[in-house]
Structures are given as structure tokens and as C-alpha cells.
Image (cartoon, rainbow, N blue to C red; front, side, top):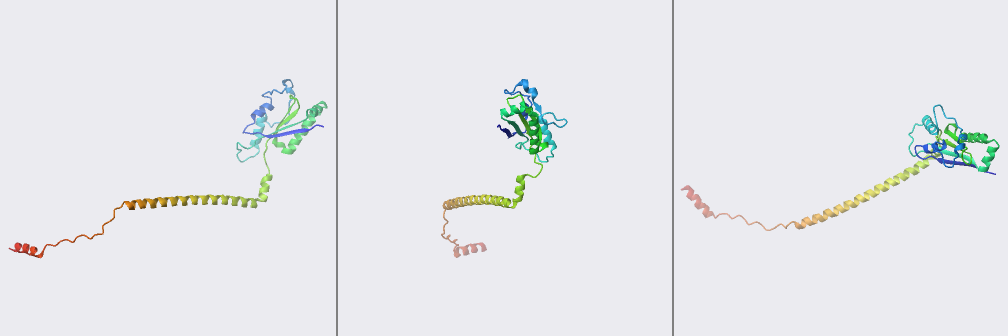
Length: 230
């Protein structure tokens, strides 16, 4: 008894051109037999005016009604590879049931991810074991399960988040106040030391009384007055 294999990977970056070139045989891999490449098949029909896997991915993103901007770190396409053990796949091919296997695989993809989201699928017959490369554009049209769960117990989660933010803000504010207090204490100590030095440099003021102004004797004043009269 063999096994069915399913490999799912997220494509990184804003373009999956390298993978598209491999799947569409624009670049021939070393493990492929060029004499059998003509047996490869396109299993999903492209919309009118769309040519190739890259255009199919872009067309789906542009026509899906996405209002928000797609950032560079978001997944634009998911790569799916479907196959089986070499013995099982050869047995399917020899019995003439390969087309049936392909149809069942595409139906499973569309039922699992949504028909509109499965934008491309290619059957490779030029490698050792037949397999399907499918491209799924992961667009969420309904409510996400994670968002729904957050909405259900959002009050509890919001309170936790608020307390966490408040604790962080209060801790930061307390650290700032401690720093400002320490700086003020240092400035106060410096000012007191400077005041002490300046006070030490000021000379002491004298407390002795000034000598009284000496008045001329009365006799001398009278003499001068007599001379003025004569």
C-alpha cells in the first residue's frame, strides 16, 4: 500500500516568477526529460486575457476586491504539490486512471481552498514520478477564525492588553522621574559647593566706626567773620 503526498509551502516575496519559470518549463531542470515535456498538462483554465501562472496570481489579487494594501511580507501565493509513491503513480498511469486522479485532486483543492483561489495547476510528466503543481492565492473573504475568537473574548483580552500597556507606561514614567530627581540633587549639590567657594573668596567687611569730622574752633570762625566786616 502506497501513500499520497501533499506538500504546502508559502511563497516568499512579492513575486513567484522563479517558481513559475520552473513549473512552465521556461527553465528546464536537470531532473526533467525534455523528450517527455510535451506530456505536461495545464489542469486549470486561465481567465480571458490571462497567460501563465504569474498573470493568474496577479489577476486574482487585482479582482478579489481587496481594499487594504498588500505589504511585502504578506503571502501572495501558496505552492501545493500533490503526488504519491512512485509505485502507486506508475500503477495509476498504467491503468489509464491518471486523468481521473488529476480531476479528483483538482476537485479536492477547490473544495478545500475555494475554486476561485486555485488559480493554476500543472501536471508534470517529464520527471520520475507524475505530480501536480498548484497555486493557491490565500484570500480571506469571510471572518477569520482568529478574529472571531478575539471578538468573542475580546473584553478579557483588551483588559489584559490595557493593563500591560499601563504598567509599561507607569514604569517608564517612574524611571524618568527618578532620573530627573537624581539630576536635580546633583545640580543642587554643585550649586551649594559653588556658593561655598564664592563666599570664601569675599573679604570680611570692617565694623570700626568712622572718625568724626573735626569742626574748626569757634574763635577762628569769629576772627574770619570780623575781618569780613572791616
